[in-house]
Length: 412
Image (cartoon, rainbow, N blue to C red):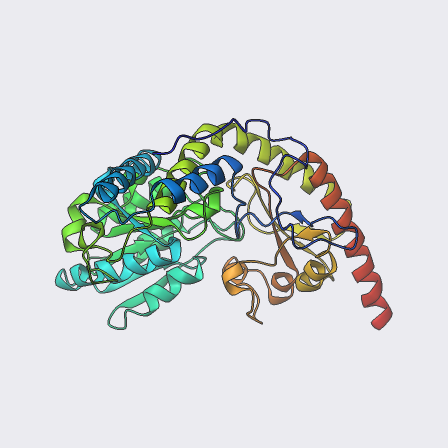
């Protein structure tokens, strides 16, 4: 595999040497907005970008061809698979490369459904706050009964409710390790124990957790990952399938029988190499980065608390270090996001639901009323976020809140 280039350990490098995020989106001062939407996408790490660029040149061959160029690409693909598997804590044989977590989620539900039918387990339990791709994939299985697992006001799965729902007819439980909107990190050890005791398989969408908090794939039967959520390339991810389940997995894509027959189509070797580089980078930085981001998140919350009527959605006790989901009384979340869009890149929730006119189903699942859910904004800090950016972001948000409240009173 292509070796990584120079070090990038100093997370506080000057703007000139950091990634040119959103370089085509300059504001009226000619500067790109401060990027704080890491849950939607984590900008490509420069070291990973260098590896990726080299890989497109060096491994420009079909890894499934039986000539020298194909052999070289296939060996690089095998090394990349080993690196990703090592990072996830599984074996290379349990890893299927996909285009991202959405495909992996669809593959998991579609692939395991025939086995569940044979076992006469036709109920599926899905966390009420899961990503839209999980709910949609489960919903396509028309002959299965799909039931939501309730969340408490902190965003945590209600373990008593889950225990009560489990039975001999439940074939699959799907709970994301960390929530994509409020950042709640779930008690997966306890969830896994309950699922195992009931004889159900356990799937987890790791898109938000992987590379940010420790995950134990040994607890899981299936797991979905996306490289671009931890500063890897867009368009590559993986589904981990426990070895004992691989023979039973029904492929979503058929044709040439690549990925051990689980996913046909020519495997994108350079993208897999970039994915592996992102895993190696995250493994090196995760512990220090998590502590730094938690400090910056707490600093941001402290600054924003100057505004009256601020409420934190979800719990701070079990949360992704870079996540902050908040509501301001008497301020519409979408209006706030638009008000600061020249200075800040933030969101009201999942990018996959950005065009919906309805309030976030995740926030409603936490028991928030419609007004508070509609006032929520999601801020995601990440690898290239600096303390200076956090201080500026707080001022931009506070100014916007003051302005929007003043305008609201004027209209009233």
